[in-house]
Length: 161
Image 1 (tube, rainbow, N blue to C red):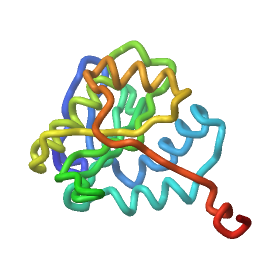
Image 2: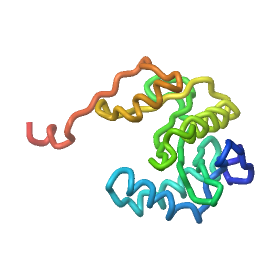
Image 3: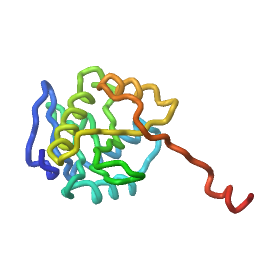
Image 4: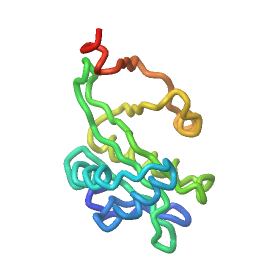
């Protein structure tokens, strides 16, 4: 599927297509309703970085009434800590009103098709341990623990210690 939204893939009562700049207000609105955080500048930046660029994909699901009911963003990354090229999904949201209508599953399938067309055979994501909704979703798609471990620490620890 082209990143520019030229191709539309129909799935029952919705279609999946590449995001357009006109979709950003709806993306922001869905994200704000889902997370409770308004991130206007973030979504403008994400669209600029992930639309119409090679190996980066920003897809939306559009309902019959042309309303945005979900989005997914991913890209191909390579050689981070020795990892061969693979796909990464780092944003996925579905309007709660349509959650059990396979919107997320179809967007995931469309993203995997984009990533396969880009030449990778593995897809990864990263979740917060307590994110049970997304954990259940990604596991239902066949994802499982991978070969890497995420580590972190507060940045200011080095200055204070």
